[in-house]
Structure formats: structure tokens, C-alpha cells
Length: 158
Ligand SMILES: [Zn+2]
Image (spheres, rainbow, N blue to C red):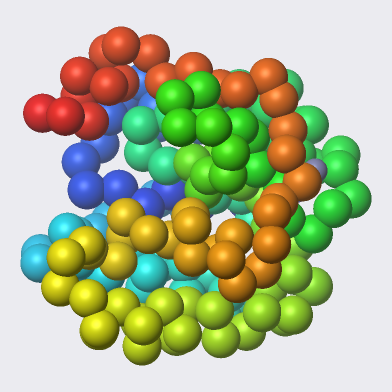
């Protein structure tokens, strides 16, 4: 089964409980210090790329279901993502990457770091979704969109 990795700054119990209930290997990655609000998320993504095995990205404010992970694992596409209820596609919030996709785009996060140094207006973690699409094209899109419930939104804003 494809492991589920989650970068997080704070534990939101409903998201962790849902992830653990799905029966996949669950691998939290804590973002600490100044990196949590700057390029820590890029470090996390780059580390997954370096490992180069199939994995699912789950952001820390998403309540995932077993059916969604089954759905992603059953699809043969190299990069798949669930649609985001609020922002529309594409998104990294719930996405599955296969090894050939990462091998085909080995420098995508290094390139973002390089490009990111040119801008002081936006932290890198905010542009990872759009950067990946700009460099690699759109993912295979899955639905229905997951819903971030109001509790998650309130937590994310706090
Ligand atoms: Zn797919």
C-alpha cells in the first residue's frame, strides 16, 4: 500500500485519526522553526522526490477517507490529485505521486528554490501547487472534491 506522508506544523487530531484509520503507513513530517513558514514544505517535497517511491501527500487540514486512497492507488496515472472544494484544481492537498513522475521531473523543487529567491512577496510553501502545474502540467484529477469542514478551516486560520 502506498504510504501517506503529511507535513504539519501542528497536530489537528481529526486529520491524524482519519489518516491512521485508512490502514496505510502514515508518515508525519514536522515543520519546525522559521522553516515552518518559509521553505520547509519544499524541503519535505524534495525529500520525497529524493526517496523516489510512490507516495500520497496529505495536507494537515484534510480529513482523508479509505475510499479516496483506494481511488488514487487504483489509478495508473503518474500524478493524481483530488479536486479542492474551495480553490478548484489543481492541488497538493490530497495527491498521489508515482516514481516515474518524480524521475521525469528531478529538479522541480530545486528550480522552485532558485526561482523563489527572486521574490520576497510570497513564501515558497504557498506556490508549490501552481509551480508543479507550471513545470509538469495538470494532474489526473479525481473527485468528488474533498471537503475541508468548517472546523478544519477555523483551525487552519487560528
Ligand atoms: Zn488518477
